[in-house]
Amino acid sequence: MSVGEKIYVVDDDAAVRDSLRMLLKADGHEVTTYASAEEFLDACKQGIQGCAILDIKMPGMDGQALQAEMLRRGLRLPVIFLSGQGTIPVTVRTIKAGAVDFLTKPVDGAELLSSVREALKQDMSAQGQDASRQAVSPRLSALTAREREIMLLTIEGQTSKEIAQQLSISYRTVESHRAHILRKTGASNLIELARIASQNEA
Image (tube, rainbow, N blue to C red; front, side, top):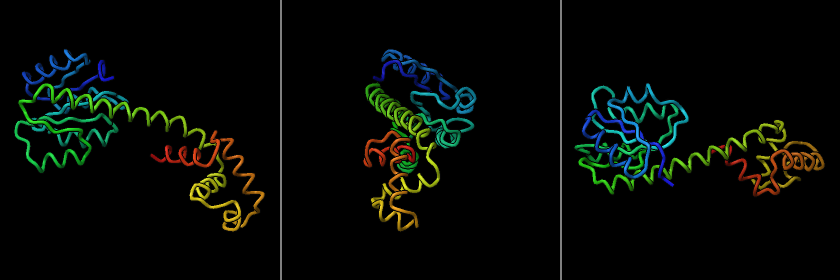
């Protein structure tokens, strides 16, 4: 599953970049290395896939600042941090910000490859969720404002009678709207309708 995915290595130490490139390529990955955070940001655009291995301490923008900037720009690559002298506060901050792992140099090759596989698994899962949202969004956008309102009330568990009373419309009108909602979204029942709605919000 992980073999062939692209890995982005950002480290100002050329020897580290070379050793990581060799290790990752030997495991079957495509690897691109960058000497600085700025170089990486200049080269990478939204929609890239794989994972990033970032050094914490670098001249200019450091690894934590790069992680924050990636999030700001919508570069949602899973991140693994490497540091020569990691501290608990720094580790906690990076993990809270979404990092997959925080490893200290010199890094154990097997440990790094294990973290890379976990990061790539997360990336594939995120891609699947994005695809689901993209498939669902057009169906929900076809709903009128009233249909969307009734859909949300239905998902909350309200009956057609309760919805009719709350919106001051007839029971028959609510039932008609619910039929249109199921047809437009492609849901076969209310459970599936709730799942479609939650995917769009995720």
